[in-house]
Image: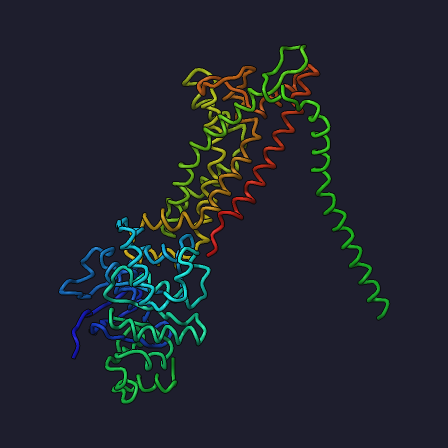
Length: 252
Length: 282
């Protein structure tokens, strides 16, 4: 069994009077990829947005429970610090339109006022872009606008931007839902590589994607965790009847 | 049946013709104004016009340097007052929760200010600034103009920020960037063209205003550099000179009208340039 990195206990999430997540308890293991799967509206996105405290951005939202990272409950930590440790990549690529590719990668440092020397910056940019599998495509025009890249490249730029902050966990919220099959395959290959450096939690609609790239899968239905386990087992011999029906395409 | 289709086609061409003629007539006032102002004003334009102050009563010649400088000072000052003021309110409105009553009231107030006649704003500025200071001043005129600029700056700031995808804000927040840093370093730079356009439009709105200045800046035939003294402005000079019985002053008024129109044209051009140069592709 690998090391636990994130320990989630009795997580409940609310929006106004509506409860979105009910007592979700599960663990994430370091340097593994975990898929969060389930039908639309089951709370997948809310779940990962709780992990990096994005859910509470809306004053009407509330979260209770524990999310333990290195023996510390992130829900008690300063949300800004949590977000620097747990990066997030969104459904639609969102590079900063006013910044070059180079500055986009360094955005986390620049915007937080963390000074770096020229050499350090060059190193971070190259390292992050290499990890995101984008270096060879963009190394000759790092000072062009990030928004001029293709959709798949933009998404990898966003991954590089998160990696640059030396995050430990990377949350991917349906990162390929707006991409073509070729770019999707690229990102999927990348996830395999990224596991060397970070722990990956990926929300996906696409069951075959979950089966291809992840080690563990959590199946959520109506805000409740129905089943969690190793991807291979969950897909071949699901313990729960609902999981089986979902995988067979009978609902969702 | 055939007759029916013919009639319909006739009807359709008739309406097309009516709309074409009425559309063409939209040009008419502009062409008339431009023709009138240019043909009369061009005679006034020479070097003296830009370097001299108005001549004494009865003498010919003279220029409108005092009004050009006065307009420049007052518009500049009103920008300094209105931009930080309006920008802050606009950002605040963007940032306020949807159900905030205070934001609702603020938006309503901004809309009301927008629709207050400029002469009333002039009178209010008179009561607030001229009466306590016991003298007319360019500063009080600038305040009146700033109040007129305010609604446009507030609304354009808020609306521009709203057009920027929320995902951009989330991307920044997810990097652990604090809320206000995100606003000032990501959202505002991304909306800079819209915000600047709003600012330029508001300048265009106030540069030709006479009414708020009558009771505040009052006007002055001399070249004044002190913002605490009465000062002239192009629209004020036009108003005063056109009311006078002297032919040479009438010429000055036409010349001043011409440069005022030219100036607003430049602002419109400036807006086009801003949008082209600063537009951020999202």
